Length: 440
Image 1 (cartoon, helix red, strand yellow):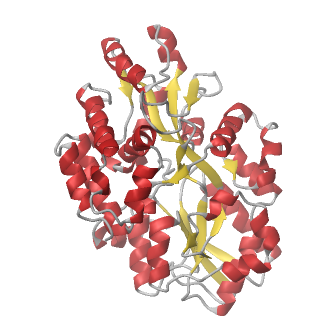
Image 2: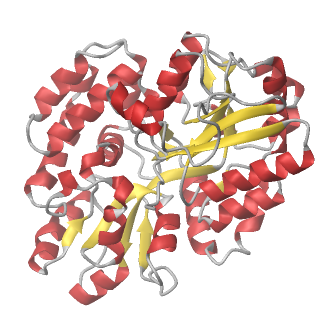
Image 3: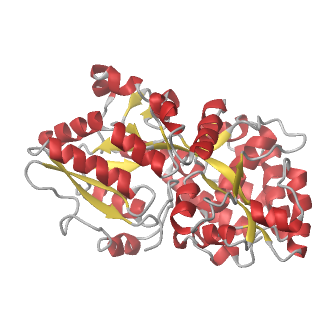
């Protein structure tokens, strides 16, 4: 089974994918939205690196709470949201909803489909105070908390193959101009500059997130997110970022055939650790994927990593990042009173010592404040401390765009991103298309 590590949500169209997914749950009843007496249902993504820590947390909770258990059903990533949306709309969703917060959560809040947890956290201050404050941003809608932040902090980082750079006599880039200078040199050596699973679209999005930020600073996307400026995507800094993206495509900066490579196949990861590509822009969860599938690549010290570099003349802070400030668990408003109580008790049980160690073992940094003291004991301590530093030093930890925006705008975004990378739209056409869905 391929590794499913996508923690930025892939939006899929049509009900066929949702219907097909019904057979993909690895456990649970034939109607996974239902749970038996004394049970609360819980859906989440299958595969490493996340499935083991999530399952372990449930198993320990169930052992301690035999009269109020959590029943899990796991799903492959790419059709998850479509399945969840269909089930929630039919009143058959899980009691506990795993997600990414932001725009997707807001849709459920607006539809009255998830519980307001503000009082829960007020009554359980110790639960809230353990977590990174930034993790509550995507869980908060109109000043109220609708989700329990969970799991790990996951910034977007630039990974590279040290062996490729050693063999080619080249050095990893420290600026955008150096990235562009490396492209022809790596191509001449027969190595793709960057791996990219472009068919999945959200992988392409990460390039825009970082370029928008480095060129124009946080205000460029913040203005888009606010939805008040009907021409926000036409900001000169945005057009510059879109243009630079296409400059990289035109220079053959990405592996040949990138638009037909899917992220869920893990082919993008394999291209990096097999030396077919020199670099890859991806989430920090990539470490766990490469660790699971890349043989001794990490053990042999061949994986390099850095924060995305500055763009010459840009207004952005190169310490800032995008990605996931956590993952998020909500409670369905359709759940019974018993299921809601089970869910809340489960939330209070999260981040015990074993779970923290499990997440650290995947190459992740748990979103609890006391996790830093546990990182040094890990064989992956250098990487984990790097992720902790990136996350803690960022003045802005932006949320993945397809989660921050409404589902309508997010789907338009992903569709136009695909066209941008295949050069089927110009930067201005991209901006015009996205301006048309501002506020929708």
